[in-house]
Length: 114
View 1: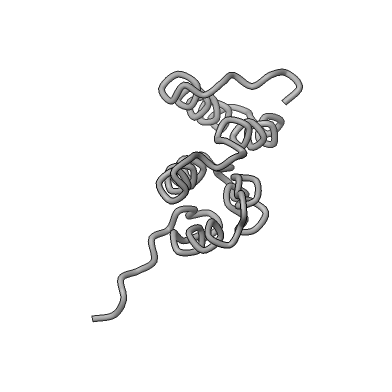
View 2: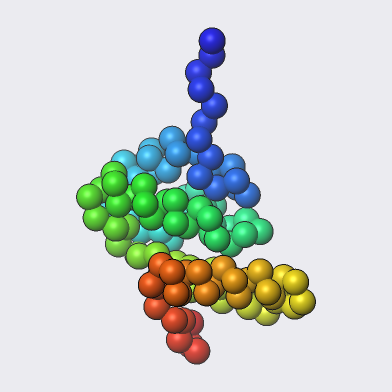
C-alpha cells in the first residue's frame, strides 16, 4: 500500500494540506494573503469559496490563533475581483456564497470601498 493521497485544500490550484502546513511553518506571522501569494490559495475560479475557510480553520488549529490577515478581508478582496463578472446563474451562485459567509458564518459586510 502506498502513501494516502494528499488532502487537497484548494481544488482549483491543487494546494494540499501539506503545502499549507509547510507555508504556515515557514512564515513568521502568516496571514491569508501571504498564503495566497505563496501558494495561489484562493486564486482559482472559485475565488476562495471553499479553500479560504479550510485554510483559516487549519491556521487556527496550527497556530492557535487565526491567521493575522483574517478571513473577512481575504474574502472581501476575492469578492471584489468577482463582482464585475456576475451575471445570470453565476451572479446567483456568487450571491448565495456571499450570503452564506455573511449570515451563517457571521463575516462582516464588505464596504463600498472594498
